[in-house]
Amino acid sequence: MPTTTRILADRILQRACGEPCVEWAIGLLEDGYEQLPICRLAAKLRPHNHFELASLRDQVLDLLNLAPKTDEEILTAYAGEILTEAASGNRDAIEAITDVKDLCIMMDYLPTLYDFYLLYFAWEDLQSSTEQYYWAGATQSNIKSLIDDRILEFARTIETG
Image 1 (cartoon, helix red, strand yellow):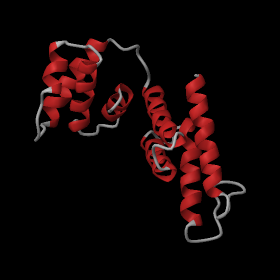
Image 2 (tube, one colour):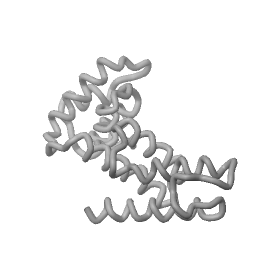
Image 3 (cartoon, one colour):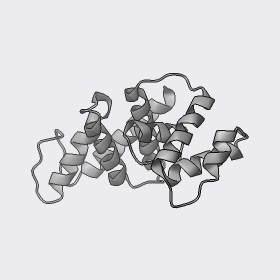
Image 4 (cartoon, helix red, strand yellow):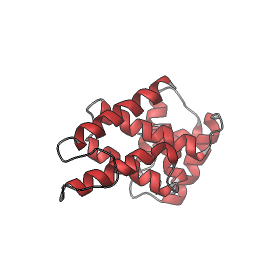
């Protein structure tokens, strides 16, 4: 089920509003929210019209009256969700750092996510070579454990605030 953080991140990244928005609204209904825009969004069937769903999504976000956060705070929280999934074994670590690397690039090399950019390219280079210049000390034999350790560290940081 998509989280509100993911929906906010998708809006910042200008990703199409589709089935994840509908699933998110269904989750809100299950959590006891019953306002009309939430009901309308949850009831939308495919094929989806991005503009219609995005308008409803924005109405729902306004209804939730969320504390204001910067784009960096939202995307860092979203990266935390992705990495927490990987840390708990519910997502592949390489897939997770690939997604976080992409977030880092989209946000002009966001410093809080930059380690995952470096680790991704170190891992990528080490798939076909014994040389990489992104992460000091990373080798073919230890890159996966370095990635796992950094994921766990980031996930713990997010959890403790």
